[in-house]
Length: 76
Image 1 (cartoon, rainbow, N blue to C red):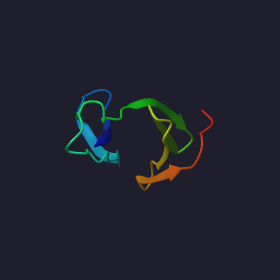
Image 2 (cartoon, one colour):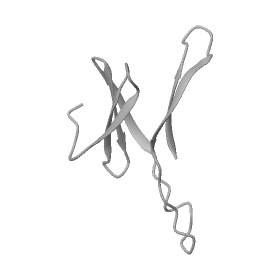
Image 3 (cartoon, one colour):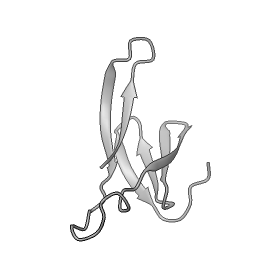
Image 4 (tube, helix red, strand yellow):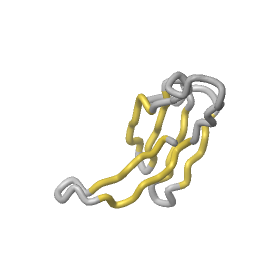
């Protein structure tokens, strides 16, 4: 699973944690070559844009914490 965690900058206390995507691991293949990592984050207005290493793009509405998978590339 890939998470985004929001923390208070002063205290370091976790405010919330959100699953962005899950990667299904095939049991008969090497696990580590199936992992997918988040490679880019950018704050745009009231949204957080997330991109993974396979160019998967997601938009998080920070008010509702709703995650939307986007087709194609996000403009960062």
